[in-house]
Amino acid sequence: MSEELKPCAHCGGEAVFDHDDHGWTWIVCKNCGISTNCRVSCGEDCRPLLAEDWNRRAIPQNSTELARRAERDAVIEECAQAVRRTEIVEAENSQYAQLGDAAATLDDAISNVLALKGK
Image (cartoon, rainbow, N blue to C red):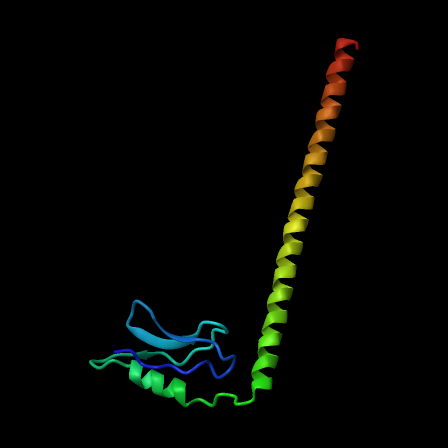
């Protein structure tokens, strides 16, 4: 049986049923991650009750509010991507510094070998 789920009341995202290996079921928004309480089926499928709870929640009618939330989420994601890019650049710079140190050590070793050979 497939229960119709309304969009998320917080962000307007798609809602889906999820479950674990112990028989617990819940509904979660694929966009923002908000979820219902967990239920376990004891003879009857609990998904209709979960869907009823999920679909009963107030959905913002104000498209401006949904747009504001979507814009906020986009800004948060953009900031997270910027942090990831910064971390990548810092890691690359660290690797370049290590290569530079290794090259300097190699130059010193070559100079020492040449000095020992009398060149």
